[in-house]
Image 1 (cartoon, one colour):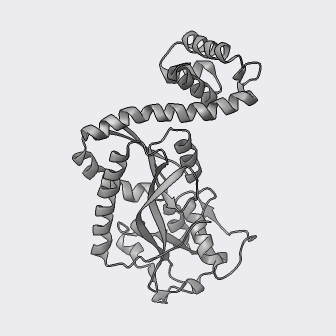
Image 2 (image 1 turned 90 degrees about the vertical axis):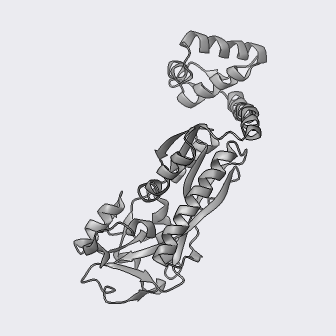
Image 3 (image 1 turned 45 degrees about the horizontal axis):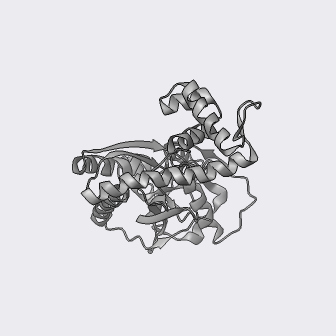
Length: 313
């Protein structure tokens, strides 16, 4: 049994196809198939049911994949130990970022991080929280930036910032003339929300549920982007809540519709998250340091108090 064989098994389990798995592993399909067959012969079990389309894991195969993932991840730790001992910060680093954080936070820290650590090759993807959790557990992401807490046993979290909610209230709305908004003023029945799958949506719903139970309500309008929510709000279709960082670069004619909560402002916790195996911690810690420093500076400049996080369910 070799680590390479286990790596091939994981590739086939993920792609459910020998040809695609071979392409991902940069080997020929016969080579990959032969190595997996050798492993099956050695173990005297069938890992994959090749009669199914797409290929499926057998019952014992499912258990083998879980253990194989642990072994392969631990094998990476050897190089990681060497890198940390040498103080080396470099190599490929796969980072996931949720959609409501990507367009605002990434431009703030990316240039500074690349300048500080030019040997790190960042591969960044915009992913939902659910996709991030799956990819971290499968070893396909080194870390991610997401709203927390997630309460996932295999994932560790380090808070980067508490980002307040800001109300976007157009003229003509019942709350437009109110200077400081209180959570009790909100009515989710006239709230524009992001569509299902966005964790910011869940934060808004949880915030409103603190004062009224809307678990079974049908919402008026939902959208996949914050920009669309703002446009719909401008058309008089309701108010919405925005992440604070999204408001920093808004046009002046839109900023007049921003209304802040009475302090302390409700906020979401945004963290850098990673697998409990703690691989590539030197890069994770540097990312945390760079991002936290930049964000603290931006928020301090705006003089906004962020001290009341709203946790996800």
